[in-house]
Image (cartoon, rainbow over all chains, first blue to last red; front, top):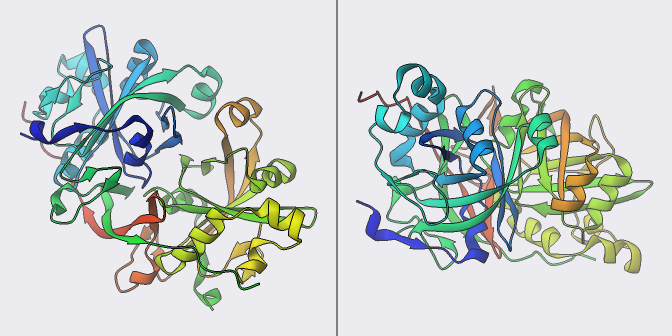
Length: 201
Length: 201
């Protein structure tokens, strides 16, 4: 559906997909297994090469797949996807995969596509997708559940992101969502432009 | 001015001040020197104790003060403060402090108050303030400019944050701001509540 609106994002502007602090989906795949989870805790880490940081709890199956494959994808979901985000964020892929033989993608009827740089499954309808390579940092992974990576390839839906800027006007259903707690989100609102205030002395 | 609206935030809910990804101000003080900068790259890192991560470039004077003092404060600025955020984000405290003898607080006429747990200067009019203790992690500080800390004490303006939730309705000037690039921000918008979508199989 949204395939035709998907456009590559210039590598040195990919950080801007996360700069305003949206909640993301994290997906990974390894040897035929795959999973996806929601993560409110992610941020850019550098401009060029674009780097990201994301917190992945030890209880998550996605984390195991990230560590095994050395790759992951961050995806920026929208208002229209909030119920899906809650669903993949509150269910356990480990249980689905290992005990029931299902995965979240099938369980929730998600439409996937393949990326350019990793095997991590990508979900149609998101506002942006960032495929990343894990920087192995065992100490902070173990101590803080903190995972760092380099952005290998980024895409965005050109209806809401182009030329390095978000422009949600006229696309309220595609606004990014920013988790507070317990299914409660703040959506991306109006844009403002600010110039530096003058010095008073 | 906003003093009377400042209320402590329960320690296990302090992460919610950053959970929706606002741009923050980072301040620090050491041996009579002090500085403040803007940072788009910060996020929560844990619930209890509340922890945070923030990226501080090697060129910043604030970083030197954070490393010297072992403490820092994150502050959540508002729409009304966007020009101030641009100002402290685009000027160099190092120059002001060392070469001109001024600091950004004086240069921009900022009204300060003292926190409860650190010497980091706090700015009136922000929506929230988090005083933190640095977790020394030299490898990631040097390699990724990444700084981690524990939240020691958090406060918020009760007009827009209470009982663990943001509520900006009726206070548009106090909405949080989320940097995209070059003085361009997306403001916190409408709140939504989502329940998990049902499984299709």
